[in-house]
Amino acid sequence: MPRLPTDRLIRSTKDAPFKAPLVVSAKIANALHVHALETRAARLGLYKGQPLANARAMVQPLCIVPADEKADAALLESIADWCDRFTPLVTLDAPDGLFLDVTGAAHLFGGEVAMLAMMTQKIAGQGFAVRGAIAGTSLAAHALARFTPGMIVPRGGEAAAMTPLPITALDPDDKALRALRHAGLKTIGMVAERLHSELSERLGKTFVTRLKVMLGAEETPLQPRRPLPDLMAEQRFAEPIVTEEAIAASLFSLAGSLSEILERQGRGARTLQAAFFRADGKVERIAIRTGEPLRDPKVMLRLLRQKLDALADPLDPGFGFDVIRLEAAATEETRPGTVSFDSGENARQQIAFLIDRLSVRFGEHRVQRFVPQDTHIPEAAGVAIPAQERDFSDGHWALTRQAGDPPRRPLRLLQKPEEIRVPASEIPEGSPKRFRWRRAQFDVHRAEGPERIAMEWWRSVGEPVAQRKASPRDQKNNPGLTRDYFRIETQDGQRFWLYRDGLYGQSAPRWYLQGLFA
Image (cartoon, rainbow, N blue to C red; front, top):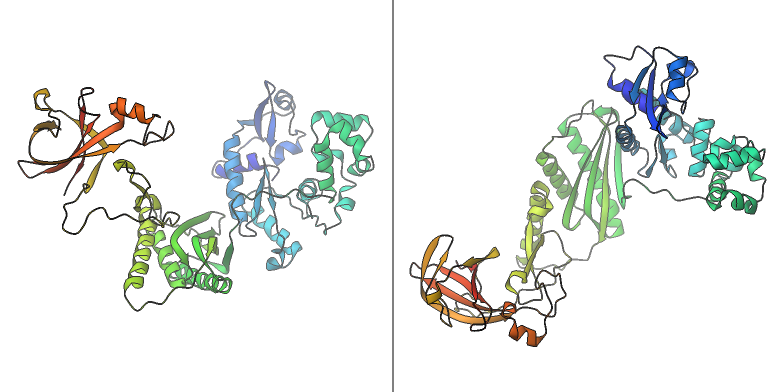
């Protein structure tokens, strides 16, 4: 898209078009140059890279607008999103181009000729000047689109197609361009006749590699903008659809097609993504994750519709969707389930489905579960993870009390232990007789303890459980590494979990409240 910056400005000012020829300026080496220009300015003899002062001297009046590279990059990204309808492997060729790997996709559009014509016509219909070409390598297509647009080169014919092009098609830097011209080389064919060792010595290995790719001898892999899905199914419409019923029917049909493929491969989807391509070029995407491999089309449709209903910005069909695609972005091998005659398995499936629904509606990070950790430190004994995550599903909570015993751990732990005030005259070797917490005075009626818990001195510095290393001798001498916990009950029946930070008698211990019993 050779005039992307000016096309962006013209499209945004359709109601008040520019009266004078439009030029976009940019600063290069502390001087303003022509960064882009529209067709009217080009016909008057202006060109890209020309000093802006010279352009003003040649043409008056001129409409000059500073370059906005961020806006141009955002527009190129949106065009790349629209091009996903042709192939999921789309790569940016900044600042004004795109690479599309159409291998195995051209037959869906009537062949390469029809596909290239359809693509360029649709982009041009949105108000962009566009050129395109198809070749066996990315750099060959890059050069042909700029110098011989519309050309389609069969695989293996890149060398013959590139030979007559000028050396500027190689996109050399200024130093390499001067060296080529000084050597009298005017076309790519003349450069290709030289020995690669000679070119590498004078122009570098990167230049030689680029030349080989253009001639079809090598290829550099494209890096797609989006991760390629494991599986996908899509549906195209002769007339764009706008109603919720038609969209839901299409999603259900795509879910059924995807389910058949997953079943044949013995896999299930863990991440589903639906892409809605609007007729005006805008693309809407929604994604859901599941806790278990999924391939039931009814469940897929229910989760997708729930995701659509939970969107803060509702799905806007605009002039309608002409393509809807359902992708299994991540799949996982399914294991045969064991048929059980009790209700345990059915209950587990219902809970898993409930977790998926809540995660879709409120977000994965808001639906969590606790997983036990291999530590005896109370605040580190459990960690909250997304409920759909299964990497930590092997842990089990150990039973620490028998039936009928009082609870040894509080139902609620404070996010951070809060220091309590204990009068100096009320500090025995056991639990305090009274204490003050959050501006309230509490009188202790009963107390159980102490339960001594030593910090994990073997942990490295910086870990959340312990902030320093210490030897067993240091642990004995440093009271900050030992806690004595007490379960206490107040005169009013409230039950708290307190601990004394440090051993009694070595220094003035500090008391903290860490949890509340039910």
